[in-house]
Image (cartoon, rainbow, N blue to C red):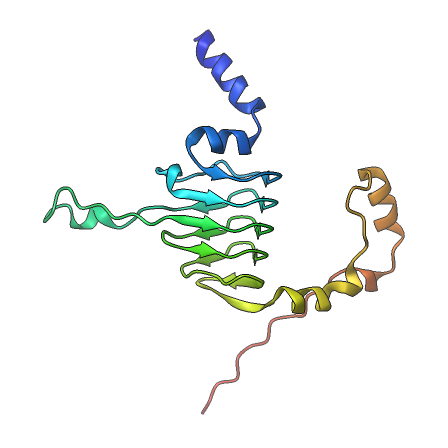
Length: 181
């Protein structure tokens, strides 16, 4: 019982990128990892440098074989997952087997990435599709850049509480589709 408690505490105190390496993920340097899920074959996953992998991200390296095992009991398929450098994988993104994500890619929260993504793109949706380039994303959002990276939480809060509304991102309302008669 004591050993299990010590193992639990050790795991909670070990950074998630270190846990990923111990599991077999090939992971570069200076990554910010907040996900616990590395599939059942973590050795098939490669992550570059300077990536942010947020909470709930899942990378899947296998799938579908179970439905065929009544005909072929050993049926099993796998696909490697590769993530380039300087990527951001949003909360609860799902990366499917065989997908390669290029460098400088933003994957929006909740996206299901079923196809490989070229470098320099923003993708989102289910299934994920290209929304724009990183350059377009930067141009669209430059007016909201508050340059607060590294600012202490209390200073950031103080700043946010005094800013005018036009400094914050505001999303428009969804429109009901027009139906052809």
